[in-house]
Length: 377
Image (cartoon, rainbow, N blue to C red; front, side, top):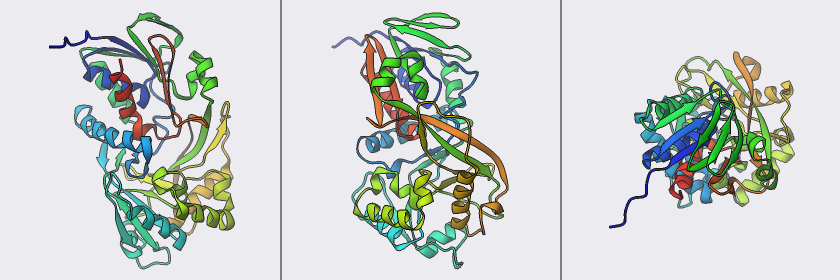
């Protein structure tokens, strides 16, 4: 019989979804875990998003990780008491070109099921059936999940910290890393393995890794609004701009759609729009988003961009304009991005692994990426 490897002490930098994914996987593998987070709570990418585990529209390696991450999410809903549900996703077509993209995906043999809907059926979900805003078609992707992004990572962190072999140290900044030692603002932590999952802040601890990986910051604009009266969405909602961003939609039909949007609505491409929204348990809608890359993202937001996004969401829901929304909050999201790869997994120092999701789908694939990395310890 092959002896079971001795448990390791795994130190993790970052209490966002990617760092906590490694913590969950390490605890499940029998290891001891210490997570350090410079802020008093996770306040960047992992809370500034839609809370959407958008599994069904991913492709390739990202798609494989997304399918596995979905299983882990379902387990954590029970174990960590997450505010999350199997919501599904509705992709809405408002032109023939958009409908062609949905028909193309529906005809493929994919890992996740889908159902092509008539415009009337999609309109019933949106509350626009029979109106001028009724869609041309829709594609229902029933297996996707929606979580509350403002509580999900906090509850996973609490679960890790309550575990007999887990610990999360907030307000603790990692200042240096070397084989076997993570130096922090509250002293040194000796560990067998160290994972640096600091997202767009990777370069503060491992500047060489961030530079060679071409890690930059992607800033996005989002809002939380009061939902139109009587709106009770089950699924998250994607639109035509979403079809240009996710791998499962890729193909000639998507390129034809890109040409249509460039001709008719160039401002959407100008701001890198992914017009989509999710409805949270309190009934409000999270609406977004735009994308702009920087070496260091400035804190300033474009009001014109916010109006473009809200106007598009309003049209989907049959409202006059974005001004019809009661806006409760606006914020800037930020995540790591790279022109070189979608996933960064590097070991710049013996016993140290740098991990980042560099394509904006951390909530969708992070849990499975952590499991994959930890399995290699």
